[in-house]
Image: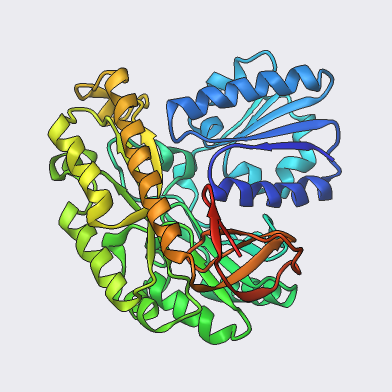
Amino acid sequence: MPIFSTLGCRLNLYETEAMRKLTSDAGLENSVIINTCAVTAEAVRKARQEIRRLRKENPDANIIVTGCAAQIEPSTFSKMPEVNFVVGNSEKMKSSTWKNILLNTEKVLVDDIMSVRETSAHLIDGFGTRSRAYVQIQNGCDHRCTFCVIPYGRGNSRSSPAGIIVEQIKRLVGNGFKEIVLTGVDLTSWGADLPASPKLGDLILRILKLVPDLKRLRLSSIDSIEVDNSLIEAIANEKRLMPHLHLSLQSGDNMILKRMKRRHLRDDAINFCETARKLRPEMTFGADIIAGFPTETDEMFNNSLKLIKECDLTWLHVFPYSPRAGTPAERMPQVDKTTTKQRASTLRAAGEDQVQKHLNAAIGEKHAILIETPQVGRTEQFSEVMFDIDQIEGQIINRKIIGLKGTRLQA
């Protein structure tokens, strides 16, 4: 069996599991496959570092590099002496690629990702824990934010049909999974390329109706400006849809949002969070925020900092801006790296304060906890809970929170 190394997002982790099956079926041996990320320049640097490390540890193996960084910068990796093959994001999901890869005379197997029109649901048995499974419902992105290279790694948005998604979730629930996480590159664009253009909310309501044994349904990350009326209905009425939403916000300043070519303003984000919390008072929010975007002044940065409390954000993913070759933002006036690093640190500290406030509020309350390992579980809001006594994996239990240690609740 090949050795796998996965960098980046949950979708990459999902696709690695699909590749495990594809390479196993193909009988591929003596190979190391690195599934790369390209979201920042730092992610690409880490990919090169990981390749060099794995070559030292596996001097006789075939090193195969795939993922977004390989798709966007194939020549960068093909020039590395450690690398035997570079495989594109579309090619890595084809059984024929892995059956024939060692016979190829060409080092680079990367086609035009923009020509890909379909996505297929890879029927894996779930991963992460025995309690939670991830289902890819969508791939690619039609938007062109000025800082982002991901569309060039993933292609345009394409959706898996609802029927295939429902059948996969039925199978996973039948295998004992209590929680399903819907994942994709631009989740709220799901359905736009399908007949009748259904919305993400329509899919969620359909899943919850047709899979009554599913205990928990969770969304990975959404663009709040694209939330449809059916999704609002699901937030309000469907208790099996978890009260935890991760939002792609990126900034809290309107001018920066405009220069990013985002589709929302700061008031849109605030209004959505207020609406969702009125419908579900227990709702918690995470968010992606970029620090030091080109032209960002101290005042613009402070608008992002203030947004954390105005939206009552809890779980933050903070990214120091790094220029990506070929993007419009690369040509804008840059913020110096020291300032960017300081701003990222300030945002993270504010996020940590919010997490502590959220966790402290849970003490003394009863929560439904999904057990992931004998001594670790998650609340519906995705807070981690520790137990002194072993619990049964995969069960959902109601327990009172009695304390807090670091960023983990104790029950």
